[in-house]
Length: 227
Image 1 (cartoon, rainbow, N blue to C red):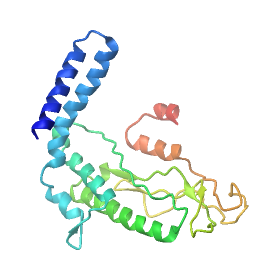
Image 2: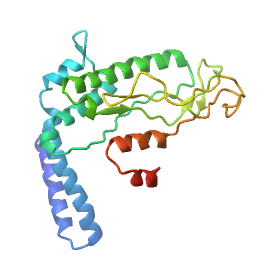
Image 3: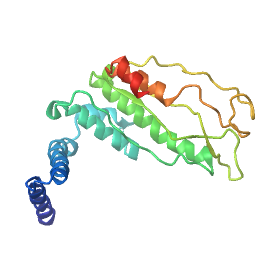
Image 4: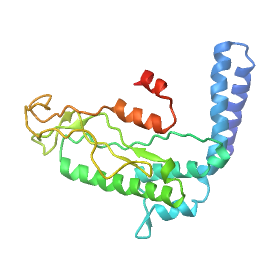
């Protein structure tokens, strides 16, 4: 719209004035904003163009395009990967998110609904990487702040806990198996942090990140410093 264009042009003028201010802090901030605007000008046409057929086909189930929030996010990631020739980026990290797992009530119903969104979306994105010939170059992995207790509460839900399962998916993944040591499902047992089945994990997020960092090309010395 004319109003949006005027606001955008006003922002450009503010950035230009800030870059010419001579104040190191202001100039630095303006430089960050300038780079963000440049990146936006590159990415926006990729994200708003007609959906490439290789993505469109992969994200359809029974002829219908997956339109859950997580599917839409992963579809935009696929667009940016397809546009790598334009962006010139060779190694990329994308973050998508999905809430609702804090299931203090009605865990089975709520978690089933969430999984019925997550799994088709991850599968569609993987199918896209296969069709695009890049499955060995792309890895999906899940991360969560916390897990749920083994024993439920009065609202048919479960409360906060520690270790849980994470999913790692991609052509380079040695998949089809469980990594780590599965806890004995014993309340107040050796792997329970309390009495409700709050399992202490055997594999840390750092260990997963270390493996992914190595696959990403990070030298072992750098990995040791980070983890």
